[in-house]
Length: 237
Ligand code: DX5
Ligand code: ZN
Image 1 (cartoon, helix red, strand yellow):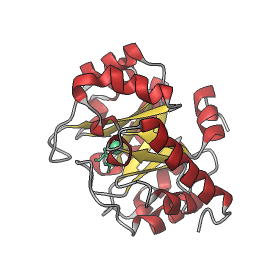
Image 2 (tube, helix red, strand yellow):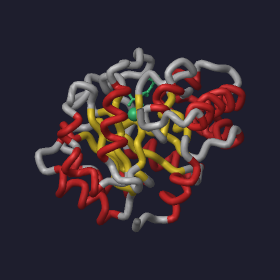
Image 3 (spheres, helix red, strand yellow):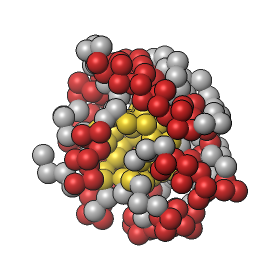
C-alpha cells in the first residue's frame, strides 16, 4: 500500500463522519468550521455543483480556497461537475486533499484518475445511485476512495435509498483494503448503522448533523452508532 500519511491516518480513524458543509450556514463558514474542529471532526466534505451535471449550483474555487486558508482539516472535495478534467488542477491548487470525480462525467476514467494522482491529491471516484456498480470496478485499483451516492446528486436533505446498502457491500468486496469506501446522501442517526455494516468507512452527513443545535453532541451520537455497528462484527454484509 503506497498511501500518503493523511490517507493512512484516515484509514486508522474509520468509521469517520465527514460533515457536508452544504448543509451549514454559508454566512458563517469559518464559525461552522471551528465548531466542527472543536467537536473533533477530521474531514470536511465539500460539494461542488455546476448546474450541468447536477441541477443545482453550490460554490466553487474561491470558496474552497477561503476554507483552505482557515483550516487544516482534510478537505474531501466532491466534484459534481461536467468536464472535470478541465478543473481538477485548479481544485487541487485551491486546497483539495481528496478529489472525487463522478464516473458518469468522463469517458476516460483511467486518464482522469491518473491526472488526480499526478496532482498529488487522494484519488476518489463517485457513482450515482442509478449507475451500475460494475462501471467503477475496472478503476478501483487506481482509487484511494470510492464514493457511493445514496441519493441522486444535487441536493442535501433527501431520503437515503435502501438499495444503496447492497451497492456498498458489492463495492466493499470489490475494492482492495487500501480503498476507502464513502457513502453520501441521507445518512443520519437512523441509517448510519446499516451503512457501516454494509462496509462504509466515511459517512458523509449533511442535514443529519447540521439540523442539530449541538454539533458535538450529534457527532458523538453518530460516532457511537457507527462504532457500535462496526463492533457488531457484521461489517461487509
Ligand atoms: C448531495 C451531496 C451530499 C449532501 C448530503 O448531492 O453530495 O454531500 O450534501 O446531504 P444530506 O446528508 O443532507 O443528504
Ligand atoms: Zn457530496
